[in-house]
Image (cartoon, rainbow, N blue to C red; front, side):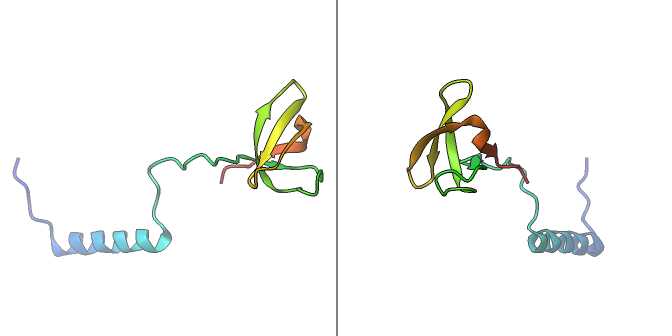
Length: 86
């Protein structure tokens, strides 16, 4: 199969598409990396409402929570929520 030369209009359209993608941020073909702290504290416990945390399940109703600054606590499972994906 012969490779044909692209016209100047096709080359110009490609440049415009690339420029638009750069200005708009483009698309990320790879999935976003998982965050190391995928939860946040929903209740106003310990003065840390809204802070991001990691969770380790202890029993059916309790979890060990580790915050970004290293502080750990045991809380009710209802006190945390998963950060929603954009």
